[in-house]
Image (cartoon, rainbow, N blue to C red; front, side, top):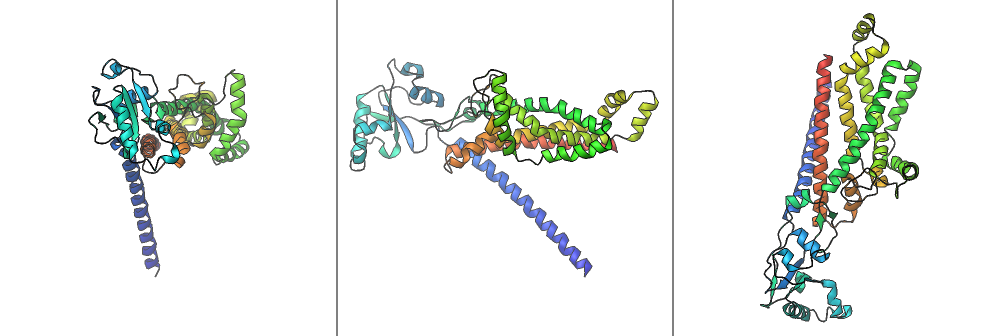
Length: 399
């Protein structure tokens, strides 16, 4: 009977592991399927098209040309390969000037005809219109070719404006740089402090002090990130703003400070465990040769536990890169190219958290957010693999 129970429990564990693996694979497949669907989406908002006079020589515009035309940064067709004439943008909202909003449905059949007349009469016009009101049966109107969003548009773009019309901009470069800037600075702050505390707990603190400090530090890791974010918003943001005489306190530097505080428990715990695993014989041999306690620490213990300390740094980076709520609350959420530590930035996790709830499912914006998730998944996977390799190296060294 006991043997049967053991086989049943073993089978349950096997099935549980198999189901967990399948679910993880399905999640990854779904994530990448939704994300890479962005590259099959048109650059212009779905359901809309661009129309120009058929006498216009231009047949295709890229994403940035379309954006700059409707932002009036490009004002002449010659800048886009056309004739030397001023560009006249026409947005669908202007149709309300032709037909009262209440009469739109009653004049539904007349709208395409009227739009055809407007475009035919203006050789310099470019009209952004819904496809259901597209001008029809007119030789004086042609539809511009619209290409799909490209990899260069996404990874090389410097503007993240997913609600921009007529062309949403999904330039991820500011988000990647903002994430790396905040995370790397946080580790540069947290690693020396964490290493110092780890050395103190492992080599210098009394047993009584260690028993008090170790649980306290580990308790900090269990505090919800929103609490850290609230602390940063109420305490750190005013201090940074007033202390550095800035216009706003929500900056990359503030985000780095709060992330450094959040990464400290992980760094301290992993590094301290690595140092305490240093063989006692190595310590005694160093002291027997006449080395002081400090010489033993930085010439024997730290070099021996270097792999463990590296793993602590990598895990700290992983905690910083994946953090959402705290960063969302203290970095200012400005999706711009970072040029200074003391300006507002936006990170990838914060962007997903802030925008996904209000994004229509299946839209290009929705797919772009999933693609951000793919980028974050790849970054964290690389960090996890690196930490695993370093940990194995430390384990083999200990053997």
